Amino acid sequence: MKNKIRPYYFFLIFFISCVKEELPVPVHVAGDIIVEQVEMGADYNTQIFYNLETTSIVSENLETDWEIAFDCSNTGSNVILNSSIVCSAFNTHKTNFDSIYQIPSSGWDYDDSEGDLDSTAITIDSNNYVYIINLGTSVSGGGIQRSYKKIIINEINNQQYQIRSAFLNGSMDTTITITKDTEVNFLAFSLTTNKVISIFPNKNSWDLMFTAYTHMFNEYTPPLPYRVSGVLINRNNTIVAEDTTYNFAEINYDLIQNSSILNYSSEINVIGYDWKNYSGTFTIKDNLNYIIRTNSGLYFKLRFTDFYNDDGIKGCPKFEFQKL
Image (cartoon, rainbow, N blue to C red; front, side, top):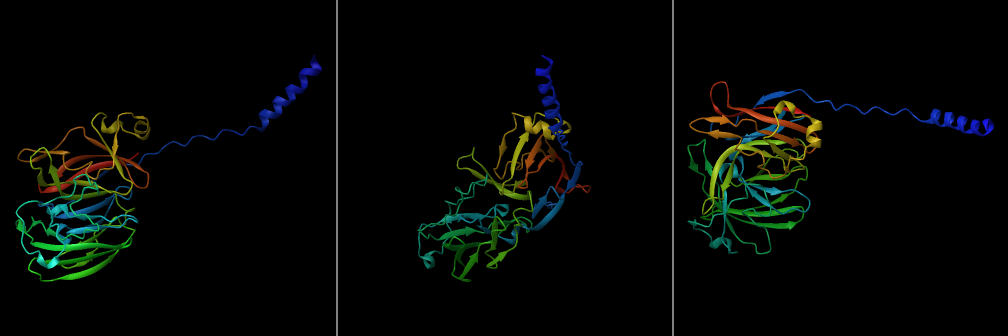
């Protein structure tokens, strides 16, 4: 019996000696808690693009720098309005550009608040209808109405648009070809200068846009467009979950990976404006957290702590966040 057992004994020793040691699973290291404050101004007239990973402002601009923007995705053919100045569009359902000269009293459309590109005010199709664009309101200029323009937009091919625009009296009749830039989500366009304006940064370089925007209160009949101030997220592979269950301090990487109650959304207004209340002054809602997965695949937790700067000026969101 001893001679029969001994070969198995030596085989076991040989097998164990050949098994590699298991590699340790690296611990997920969280970043530091960062406290930031950005200043849109008391009238919310500055738009600010922010990168969470680099803890920096990528770019900023005045909200009145542009009125419409063109989708730059390879297959997209969408046009959005600058809702920070409450731009709206009226579809004349006519194709004779020169015959449009009157401002309609009703029938104005606004882009979907959630950013659904199938629910924009302007549609590019084979009908080639003329649209009248309400260029919005300059709040910082005392609430001045910024005039109207008529436009026709054609998609020349999947990389180019053509836009014809003029004031309703026919002046400044201009036709321009716009070529997509796939490095950005949208190319902004100024109908006041008839030029492409550099507004949206590289689509991989930012996460949050601090801005005023038009929110549609659909509980009213007809729905009420109202200018609010808040945060819109990057459309490019960014998702956010709102949380009111966990304490901010306890939220970590393992918790969010194993939580069954976090529901992520890609709607651009998922953070939005209602992290604050208004009753004479603005106050921040308690225990309202946001879990953000950026387009680079990183997770952050974020909460707001103030809407005023040290001088008591509103329009200055203060927030703290941490890479998980």
